[in-house]
Structure formats: structure tokens, C-alpha cells
Image 1: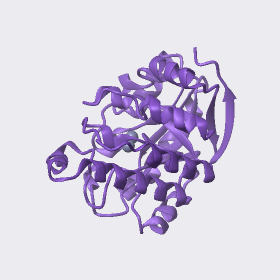
Image 2: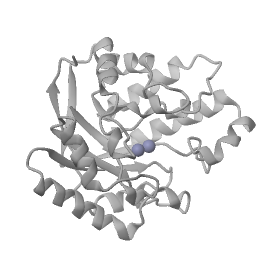
Image 3: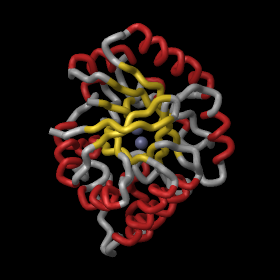
Length: 265
Ligand SMILES: [Zn+2]
Ligand SMILES: [Zn+2]
């Protein structure tokens, strides 16, 4: 098992020491994991959702140190970066200062609205759901074209609270998958959606089928904000990958992707 989406308490909304995540991973029989805490926000928005820029060197050092200390598990240095249109250069500057193995690009905001933030959930009632979904997919395509990222995180996060579009968005999703493919991005199968109101893996089975049609590589992530959630529900994620026809998962080192043959059983 490889879990590439693990947070730390530096982001302010996760619990447990970093070492406890490593120990939890080892206890689950994981041979490779990656921390991917939130990159400090390059805007004022949501400062409470990420570590400060001053804490980033400490995060990097701690991950590298843990990797040195634990020989039984390979610990990668990842980061989850928010995508903000117009701030690509600023984001790139921060990313390039550190030796990341991979960068997960995530869309959590539509303009100033944190659509997956429970504190801003009331905004959903004021919006056209189909338009929210379209705006979300437009941002995913922009994020993929930005060249900033290696992996697209939880690529239908917009469904988190259970609002469903009435329009058929298949074409929108196909267009998005095409852009992922053109830009050589991998996508994440993220099990944290099972712990949210939607109670589904991100992305859903139908979306993953489309990704497979476009030969988009996959990685797996628990989005753990607590040590006990490392690799949680990966059995279900593997089952889904197998159903769709995937037989490989990706690994990253120094931002280079390689493929690992898998039977997902
Ligand atoms: Zn995220
Ligand atoms: Zn995350």
C-alpha cells in the first residue's frame, strides 16, 4: 500500500504528531507513504487552513528526518497546494524552494468561496449547483494547465456535502480528463469522501472510468488528518480501481513519476 495524502497538525486542523502517522502507517503494513500537508496559502484567504510560510522549512526537515530514521518505510516529501488562478508564479516560487517528491494540486476555492468549508456551507443555497460544478471543472482544467502540479487531488471534491447537479456533466468531465492527459498529470483516488456527507470516494466510479479511458495514472490518498486514518478504506479504493480496469499505480520521487504494476486485490 502507498498513501500519498497525509496531513500534519501544522495545518491547524489535523491532530497527532508526524511520527504517529508514520507509526500508524507501519502498523498497517504500508511500505511507502507521503506527507502532503497544505502549502502555506499564497493569498490571505483561509490562513487558518495551512501552516505559515515560516513553518514550511520545519515541515520539510521533519519529513526528511523521519525518512532517515525509519528504515522500514519510504517516506516521501509531498505537499498539497491550492490552486488560485493568477497566483501561479507566487505558488511556483514557494514550491521550487524545497525538494518535493510530488505536488498535489487541489481546488478548494471558487473565487473567494471555500465550497468544501463547513463554515461556508450556507453559500450553497445561494448558488446554481450546475454552475458551481462547471466552475469547479473549469478551475480543475486551469490547474492542470498551470504546470505547477504532478497530481490532481480529490478531483470531484465539489460533491462533498451532497449537492448534485441536475445537468449531465459527462462532457465536462471528459474535457477535463483530456486536459489531465495532455499535461501528464496523475489523479488521486481519495478515500476521505467516505467520511463526509457524500459518503463516496473522490472521484466517483463513473469519473474514474473516464480517467481510465484517457489512460490517466492514479495514486491513492487517505487525506488523513489523524494518524488512525492513514490508508483508511484503501480496500474499497483498490476494489474500485480494479473494477474500472486499472492495473498500475504511480510512485513519485523528485517529481518524476514511475509506474508500479498492481493487481489491486
Ligand atoms: Zn484537499
Ligand atoms: Zn488534503
